[in-house]
Length: 96
Image 1 (cartoon, rainbow, N blue to C red):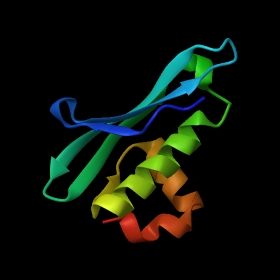
Image 2: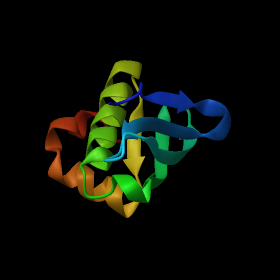
Image 3: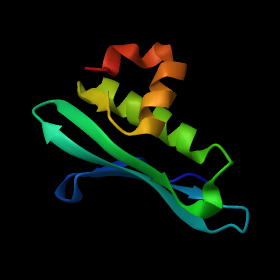
């Protein structure tokens, strides 16, 4: 199960929940800095119990789709976010 992607603007964090192998909901998040309609992605982290299951990649896809819908541009400063962006050129339009 996956929970709704959300922007927790007061914490400058995007987050989404995913169900781990034990049926517990765990979080993937990205801390960001906002500069107008640009979001600098500073750090992406998945709960350790979600790692190697694809949750971080699904989160990044949800983030890119959210940015596209909201008219935001992303600057992936985090090494994971930058590598994901290089592998998914179909989202180049959301990169600043």
